[in-house]
Length: 372
Image (cartoon, rainbow, N blue to C red):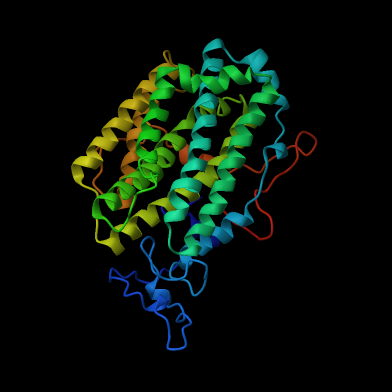
């Protein structure tokens, strides 16, 4: 079973040890020239997540070996949507799903298609260039690729089922409940893409931290995670199994993204001696919950067998508490219950397959990767 607090420990079978971080200010020694005019060697302890003064082009020695481990393990995992047989999904969508279930399926795709492109742009354009340790950037480069792969996956599902691409892709613009989530994400993430942001200024640093926490803790950590659940509910009834398997692969990538993002956010808080204000976090969680509840009511105006809007919203609150705990912050929804105890199991792909029906995929290449 994948460890949701430390997926690297589950991948390698052992916890990743991290040297204690320092909150001391960087004195710039690594870039101070010697008498001969050449730069001094890089001291790993002088590295920082942001505002570092060491050479961004020098990978080692590592200050954050855990970041390099994320990159290594991400590259042991490789898959494409073409690896998964979608024949049964074509039959299910056209002959077995009810109109209500088609509505659920199509709108989950409509939300995810836009969200993963937004995630790709946020990491590639707003986050990577602000990281001042290359081991962090290298994993995030892999993350940009994975978000692109996820977008391909949704497009593959749309093409395979013969859905109207223009109509599906435009739903985030015309459906208020989908557009509301994207609008919130754009506002919270694009605020740190402005060219004049300066992370040595406390206010700008706080804006960046809040945006990063939103991205890792809410956008990927709750909205993505919760966003797959309606398709998994269909899978549990033997419907849309190919699509659900595609999302299982995506979910396992996202577990790593969330864990990495939360770890980076905590490192920034430690090194920069900064914490988000409680009122700012309360407002963030309240806004995210309201948007998710509206989305759930649109997605599931009436329950489908085994799943409802109330369950979707309740699970959001439970997962939000988990993310807050991982960040070392107060739970936003005390007492929220785990109404979908089967959901965490979806990250662990079932390997039982009929050889004559589908290609066996092991979601790993180049290494013996154990997820148990």
